[in-house]
Image 1 (cartoon, rainbow, N blue to C red):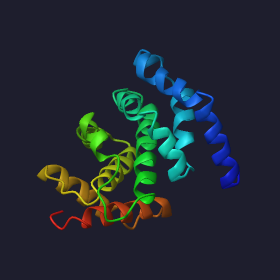
Image 2 (image 1 turned 90 degrees about the vertical axis):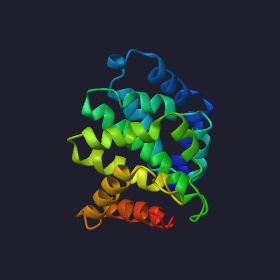
Image 3 (image 1 turned 30 degrees about the vertical axis):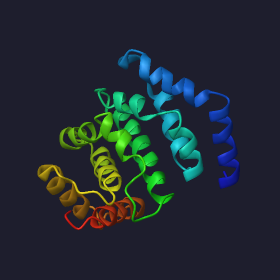
Length: 187
């Protein structure tokens, strides 16, 4: 689907309340009742996307709902939730000044999202969930120091280990995450 048409569909999904309804379901239903169709629809909304669409989504405060789903035991639900968070963080980074602090860091941090994502990074056995959680943390710490020494070592080590990944998208995400971290010399 051409980018412009996709943006129009995404805008319609926000304006009609579809995305808000999905977020409400993900925040209020019993965790075990939230199945792939719900999180799959939300995750597909976040990629491919644009900074403008992600800004509209961000106004709906998606992080509480998506972070809640990281508590699921179903690895697919967890992966798609983490992927949606990562996409929001990614578009927030590429849509703003590359040397400024990340615009969504404070909200994610206040919700305990940084710790929750790092905990997921440490416990997951799924390669892609580990990659997505590491790149997300690297990008959201743009121009900020990672003050947790264990987090700093583990995330930077993992990002360096995937910098030459065979998947071009993963390689680019790892490079962006390391570049974001490098802005703050202490990292």
